Amino acid sequence: MISKIKDLSNASTLVVGAEGDDQRVDNFLFRHCRGVPRSHIYRILRTGQVRVNSGRVDATQRLREGDRVRVPPIRLKAAKAGPGPAPQGPELPLVYEDDGLLVLDKPSGVAVHGGSGISFGVIERMRAARPKLKVLELVHRLDRDTSGLLMLAKKRSILVRLHESLRAGEVDKRYLVLVKGRWTQAERSVSLALRKYLTGAGERRVSVDSEGKSAQTVFRLERRFRDFTLLSAELRSGRTHQIRVHLAHLGYPIAGDDKYGDFELNRTLSARGLKRMFLHAAELTLTHPGSGEVLRLTSPLPAALAQFLETLGS
Image (cartoon, rainbow, N blue to C red; front, side, top):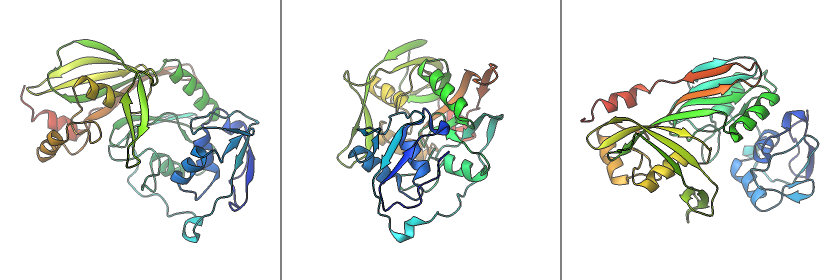
């Protein structure tokens, strides 16, 4: 295992150990370049200053044990060079834990990692709470405003095998979502390719685009209301903002979605008590990569969302 870079003023070469095998290069750099803002890490990746085995890579490139990662000189302001304050916040609720896997019930409004003006997210808080763990990594991600089940790996072997299971579609992830409008089909499978892009203000967004990456979601009708419908959404792929963009494109924006939703409606819903996006990661079924046991984990609908449903007319 290699140490974090202590002198950032000179170019450095890091050799990936067993703990870095199959890790994305951006996550690898976050761990080994302490004190460097995430925005700067993404900048040096985007501009080709980070090289893996002498070649340019993007942020999603997965590393292999033995890879050589060249990191350019990085200038930091003195105030940012040292470690920041300890992460603050209430203890995050645990749903499941063993020696290799940890599953949290993430509240809405909590980012999974720091960055973009957020000092600490779930992963930073959990690492601070479990300082003796040599490995603690996000297996997947949830949007900041999405609540529900989130997996973290405590062993590199568990992380690698769960990533393989996710890519193979062997992990069943289901969400509850409230949409504008009256959905009529009992079940609908949606296959629409998605493409990431940057807005003029530099914000990351996603749109339906035939040139994008394939994405499939299966929606099932759960409950109808006068002007809204509660759906379950089964992810058959794991693209950024997949459920949100698929539903908005179909004309059923998610209640409270501040990126792809109906903004005028959202203001009305906020006055009626819905202060967040109505999207919740409710169920997770997987074969444990260590024990082979089938895990079926659930997270109940948060009280604020359940209470809001009761205000809707049938």
